[in-house]
Image 1: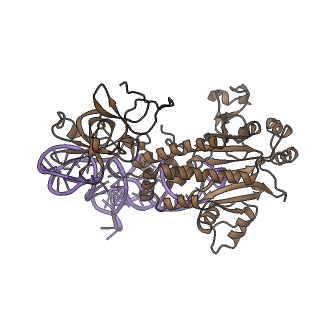
Image 2: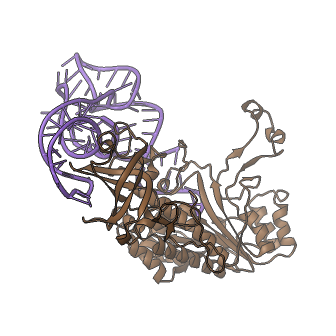
Image 3: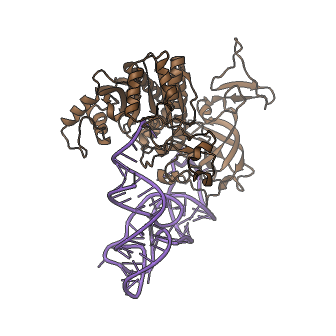
Length: 496
RNA sequence: UCCUCGGUAGCUCAGUCGGUAGAGCAGGUGACUGUUAAUCACCCUGUCGGCGGUUCAAGUCCGUCCCGGGGAGCCA
């Protein structure tokens, strides 16, 4: 329908969420939610003051329906928000017996009618149907989703239908909100986004096993040195990190970030690992570890604050049904500076802790999960930045500290998740970098482009990687990472 | 990959000492003038994860494989 696009005095398109305007062709008040002729959705409709009783059209899916003899109550969702809109259907509808009374969870419908104040508790407004048409049926004998709670394990087995549930719908909206907020944050800070390659020939050392990308047949792969005949003439794989390429652009554009899918062929079966996940990796020139930490902390606070402001209904759902204390935890993130300690201080704190650990605490070995949990959940009770790890447990590119035995690394540990961020100041001194690469047994030829960055106009620079799904887990309180990504890929599982 | 706990109706689960399968919800039919996971009555629902073994008899005991949860490692 030719909805009119409204412009303001400066000629800009009006984008207010809800506007009423007079439709000449119908002579009625019609809601128009935006400038692109899209019909208003439930999120907008619920904000309407119902006194005008506007005529509306609503398309969505039946969440639940209750037949109360003389009338039907049908709750419709359209994915725009957590809340549904209650539709009142009366026997006067011409298809009341044939269709309306037979509606069931999952059916797709279009309802036309007036939006009115609701006389009953539970909702401020409701839609009094003047016509209701079935767009798509969902056979109740076979439709897997019921109007009751399902286990996340079961929902994972129907990943094509689970976005229709309250919790997954809410996760998807929060995930999208966080995604947008990340781009907004970096744009505001003067960063540019760099699209680093998905297919790569450089293995970011220490980041994990790569998936091989090949155009060869199984037969060809059995030949000696097969990848010389392959598409790229050498072995290629799916990226395990965009960091090394991001460094290239940090040294040309100053402040950059890469944010995209990342792949690890590790046989990890845990609630916080995926074979395909999204990673955010900012990289900043003229920046040391202290700046790096400052940016990471500001980012996390900005993102948490954005979700607290914009996704109150969703967070309320998670607070009530998924993770008690979630809101308090998130508000703590905003109200206090992150705790900070060096690795050496952390080891000392663990050694003096009044409790037994399954794994011994020893300077020079990596912190175990139980150690990290103790530090940020019990000792500090808020996000914790651990810095200056021993060089032998960190990758070659991290900058050697003056003590000669630690590197300018930082991990941000958060309650319930563990490591959310891992970052460092990069080694910008050519001779020291070559020494560490040599010690790690890397082929200098392979990394000559990386070393060039230190040969020509090298500057101190730093960056970090943030696991996006772990961030979504942290913000929603969802305990399994497979439930915060639309289509989880894990060992032995990639259904659709 | 390792440790551990599981796999029984569409879903969530119970099932005693080995004796032949059960509940709630969902679904179906009907009742009900405003419901909110509506309520009430009646009805339907099974390759007990697969294969093999022990036994007169296996959901139950043994072996093995598959799948899932939780924990660990690797990491984000």
